[in-house]
Image (cartoon, rainbow, N blue to C red):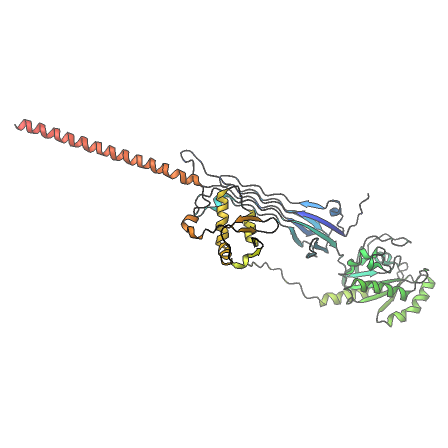
Length: 495
């Protein structure tokens, strides 16, 4: 199956990279087997980014390859070695690409301007190693946090050509010929309908004004409802500052005349919607043909009576083209002057609000208490439930933001089921720990190997003290015994 060279609408599946896991490690060296936690953090996963590249005019690359994935972060290592971050995947898109969430229909971005970008799939954050989790209350964590999974999303990319003037009209009305006559663009031109299958852009210079003209593939009656090809390209004129009706005055098709053609195209534009405020110009084309010139002279007054400016032109002889290009330049210049100046780009850092009750919600669903919130759900995803210390640390974190207090206030009892999250929630048996006290709670999530070392150290130190005390006692006894012997010798000599 042949793949088209021009694609202006695609569905793209994007996957952010997973964050690397943190590592639980203990520093070891000779005569110091447990020197403290030294596990490094995992690297962040890469993100998928869309960035405008003005040299592109089609989305065909994503029609061929509709799945794009960023790389994962590298897990941490011992000796305070952090894992590397995953590489971002930057996808170039044409200027004028609209990004929409395919599932919700939410518009995520309207990308216009060279270099404009948006992150469509955020990489997961890397997990913290046990060195980063150490604190005054938890000096020896025996666990690390897991890396978060990257974001998965399906987006729709829709190209809307960025042009100042849009040419609309029936097939074979001469739109492509007009673009070729007033610019250096060289679109395909032939004497059969629907020759143009893709929008053509041309750059026009009129006096001091430079602007772009887009040739929209031919519209027919019913195009807004799916007839012909025009319904696929009506979106390309949404950004235009002005619309130019190109009317074929030399057509021999029965039932067609310039006024009827104008009414039909206007009806399709109205059905598409959003174009009512755009100024219009009317071009009566092909006046190099005598019958066409006579017809143009006949209908020009009727068109002008509708409040529209009329230009009689010939793309073959170039008659009337200069006046037309300057009229388009006038409209474009007025539109640009009416636009507010672009605001300077400023980076504003807004810290997140202080933690509070609004960080989570608790609702009763049957026999289950369901806890929802970005922070608690993220903490659950970071927890290794095969590690009892990690589970204890999670309990401390949830208690710290008040989940346990709220559950008690709502009437939860020990043993009730508590689910944190949505469909893939983790379910706990509610076991309030408030009466245990901070002294006991502070030891949850601490490596017990360090606790086991302390009695051995104490025994070794006691033994050393006993040895020195015994040694000092022996020395004192020897000194006393020597003193007694000396006294006896002196007494014997005196006697």
